[in-house]
Image (cartoon, rainbow, N blue to C red; front, side, top):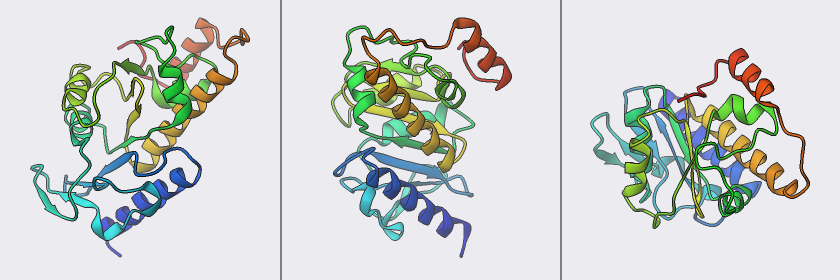
Length: 216
């Protein structure tokens, strides 16, 4: 089996796993990954993470032209913005995960550092998460907002919509977006309980030890 065939199978397997665990439902969410030749494999528009077909993924060449498969997700501008501004991006995942969306609706949500520092893992895998305002689904302005960050964030939260995370490869991106949802769930579970999070010194220790992009 070729490397691209393996990647197609992996994309569909990871997407199905997230769907089966309720991280995105119905036909929501989209996922993409770089191919060895610099192109992209992307989930098609209107498809379910639970039923992606490896042979029907949208296939782009290195110049950004659709060359095979079904029509891609309408949120391609989000994916393209991460690939164009972050040289380390090998995959992008966007979910409609409930707890992160709920946290984005809170009036005291921190726009510059969306996830509260409750555990080291959200910091390690995501750095600071930028909360972006609400956009209509498919609005190219979402991509413009990501481009405006100039590659300084690996993850953003679209208010009232869902998280978008870039990783070095498809597994890293999926692990990171799951950590984002887990941290948001902890934040919602403990909301109003005055939980003991990490201190600024503990956060800095995690940032230093694991070389996290943090101050951007």
